[in-house]
Length: 295
Image (tube, rainbow, N blue to C red; front, side):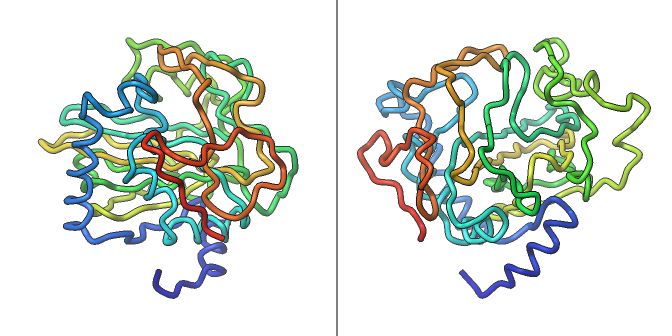
């Protein structure tokens, strides 16, 4: 990784709630790499169809080798360490496709991921450090992400104040999938119903293939509709410091109209050490390939 000023980037993050975009790979490298990953994702004989297949493609880094490597890319992880501390676990990954004609994703704000039918948050910190967030997401552009095909949008600085009550109950309604967050309407849990996020200082995060941003989910974010004729594909790498308990005591959960079994879930130690032992750790993927850990 090129020399970067991590301290300066942390100051930007503290002010904005996000940093980037940064270049992980050049567009032609990412395009070729993503083509190879798609082949594995669609392989009916692969372990993904036997072990980690699920309705919304959570945690495919656990069975697709390339995805297991990208979550430990130093250009991403070193920046995360500067923001969240040296010891980091990846607790989830997600694909975020947006096809031509798809609606935008409504504004939302979370921290513990108490979404929808979950009785409690999926993330539980056992220590509190006001100067450091308890979670981060790296959003990697596998394809171009422009305003026309549904790039992310954020409200800079919004991580410093709660505008949504993530502990308030919400019911999933697929008929309202275009209203807010994949069937959950965050407008229902706004703390101030008169506050309008669209009237704030909105930043559209356009990216070339191979670029990424890092943000805290407390920073209010969403995405634009895809009014183009090309797909947008993003990949989210979600991490926590090791003092955060993941899925504490949960063996399953319901979300987005689907049921999820956690019996095979494991966090991946992508940086540093685990001195807390709070979470089950996955040391290798479904092919038996070990995950890398940065020191």
